[in-house]
Picture (cartoon, rainbow, N blue to C red):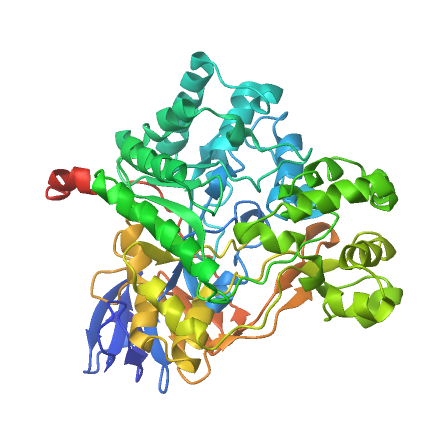
Length: 582
């Protein structure tokens, strides 16, 4: 007798194959049968009118801290996600020392938009090794999660304050390599780092990994081939790729002897500049393949609605002269924004921006997303250009005036333009490209800045159901078996006998994403952007129901994914002979 029978549903198995009517049976946390016939089970779920699919995957999140206060890793699990990966861009929170934590908290608050009060109130910061950190999560999560070991955490632990501003000695690199080996042996899924020009710490200095030499970076990635099933990730210097970017990504893949994934590729307004940028980004994969390496970009199914503010300064601080502004305490920052000399410097820095970051300096195109002062209430939802025209003011002056009236707490959306229907078929070309994987949600991070956390229901609901850019079967494939295969997951991402019973039951006629809103449910009184899922009826992890009609059941069957145990090595072309023996 089976433990569970899911009857009367239509199966989309994750492979991209045509859907079919079948019952799905589960025993011992794995799928024990897929058939049209009746078989006995202790528990039965009626899935009539619903699609039964594999659980969805999110391959780039920052749930490392949230996992310690939110077992559901919301909103991901409510959007059908049963497996997440964290620890990206070098921003893990292990290994740790008592001295490291006071540095990592404000770094994460600035670079990843996690409220400092939530990091202080919701995270104990009382572990040392990576194994200690993972031990705090074992048996306590509703969904499966795996975490990479981050470069900035390693660097800070080994080098202390020298991690910012100094190159490592070979002895220090050797110590970092030893710590990385220890972390992986204790369950870290791999290694991540960042060279991104947008990544700054709590002091508005470049994060520790940005001070590393390429030799240090490649030595650390070269540790990965020592372990089965490890994963490599890097945030490149800029999303405007250059020949140097090509070399960095290729060299990392060759050093790691693994595919390397990077974040983030998107198509929003279909401008010639966007197409040129995406072509350059995809070119990195072709360049790598020619040298026997593999580079894969994560791509979004929707337009990322970025938000910025004068408190954290994230993204604004990437403009020349603006970094210095965000080094100032809040009161001094406000004074600088009133100073004519400062304002000229800031305008000049903004005017120099080009490429994908040019929207940061286009103040008139900033949309006022949310305000705190009643005096600004009438501006909410409007473009700065419109407000400035009404008052006969220049866009930059209006932008700053709104923020100052709000004690700098105004949230703006840069470069805001309504989405285009024709964008979805164009994005679909990226989803289907073997040089990409759908991902890059950054769920768990940028909590006041980006609403890309619902990539799964966006792809299926908007991309497939509403716009028909791909079939429903293909959409499911893009968030199940395709990313699972790329990340090397064993027996996840497909409905087949013997595979893990991570499953989603959803309504094909209503699946989608609700409106984005602010939700005040974080430790310490913090708030975050949030959107509820539509059409996700049930979510099952390891044969245990965790979400029923939008409500968590209280179950925590999620597994901590460890290399070799939960993952296998994904070979790059140069390792094809090894792949034959996998």
